[in-house]
Image 1 (cartoon, rainbow, N blue to C red):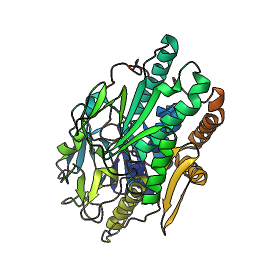
Image 2 (image 1 turned 45 degrees about the horizontal axis):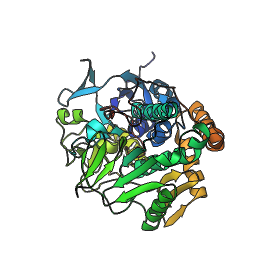
Image 3 (image 1 turned 180 degrees about the vertical axis):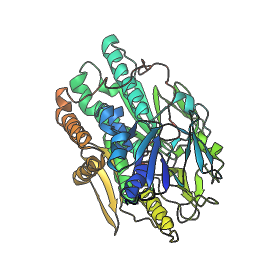
Image 4 (image 1 turned 30 degrees about the horizontal axis):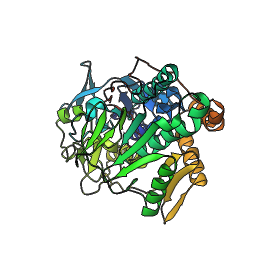
Length: 442
């Protein structure tokens, strides 16, 4: 007689970002019944969203079908959003009311923009944490340039980026390159000296996790590109026309972009799980949620008691794999092991042929080689061969043809007629539970 093998444990992974997909890969060929859930049918590669926002990549370059990735590793995919958790019944409830049972649950839902209670920040600034955000920003920038070109608008245009972390630095540098390199060729009728880019940071330096020498190099490079860098500047309020600082000074801003922090999406508070300051889920050293033996939380949505980690892709990838490994250990009757983060370094790009890289053992470098290193690594980590090839072609086209009137990519995604430069501000858009994670969102 043929003996039927008992089905493995049911593992539900919520979130198809770096952490969630790492968990799915770690569970492949283990015999587990793995189900991946995400509110989107695609996974977004967030580190390159700024390239989409500044017309360097198409939105499809940074999006990969979740079904393809889950099928590759033997997991089922369910399109939906997590609405509730019942630990006693070992069930989750989705937004459409459907219930799914689990033996183990891995929460990897990512984060959304955090506005720190600043009046007007959510209403009058653009975020850059989702594919939708990037398309809205790009369409607004491009519509504004077309309007200026068509009408001969003589007023100055001011773009302000709030937040001097990697996302803010990369976006400000790319906007400066767009103005300095591409504008003269694509819009020769527009006086580029009338377009101003500002970067505002509350801390005394940019890229605070980096070595001081790399922080100063970053500041100098942005200033060299014509970016107005304002450090130690705390914001009191944002309006449709300006940024107001706590000292009473103001900065005129036609477009304000928020890149000054993230927090768990609002639905997390309804899951009745322990939360730390800032709303992140409290987890133990083995990544299990405090008080819940069968629920893991990984990536940016989680905070290990006494062991805070940077909100980057590498911690998320390692946490996702560790959670998968611990489920295998528990199923084998072994105790769960503590997570230990292996620092593989950090990097950020500033603009064309300029980046900073900091590796373990005090290895630090910047400039063109750092930029090429950053570029190669990010193309390598893109999901799917088609995405890698398309992104490589589009980015090569951008940097090789910008001076000759090429390299601007428009119209590949949604466009609901966003207010152009100098028009009314567009309300910031963020997506919640189930969001893929990225460079500043693990």
